[in-house]
Length: 134
View 1: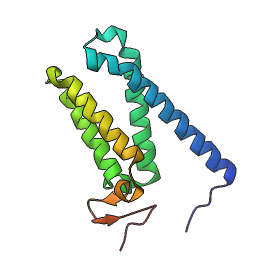
View 2: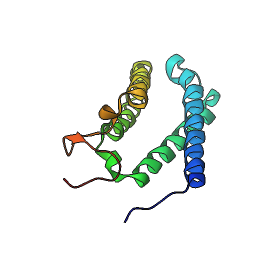
View 3: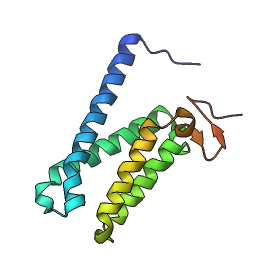
View 4: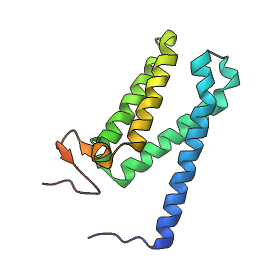
């Protein structure tokens, strides 16, 4: 049974996700100086918190919408970005390079072809929507 979403519901969901994404970009942009120039964390902590909180929310939103997100390249690369971010802690000397790699991955995932974003590493084919079997 397929759920139906009214145009108004779709608009609200789309605007909500767009607002969340905009806040995420704002937080990441604000925190970027800390990573790139090694600034005192007190100068960028609020931006960091905004970027991380909205990133977690966006990932949760995607998984809620479709658990397939976790096996599609868009979800896999999100987890790779989290891993690269985690590596900044034990290797702070590499933070600028790791941060740059995260930003480049973000652009490729956000703006790459849908065939790339929706490719499932588990199913070894492009999956869209809720399809799991086949």
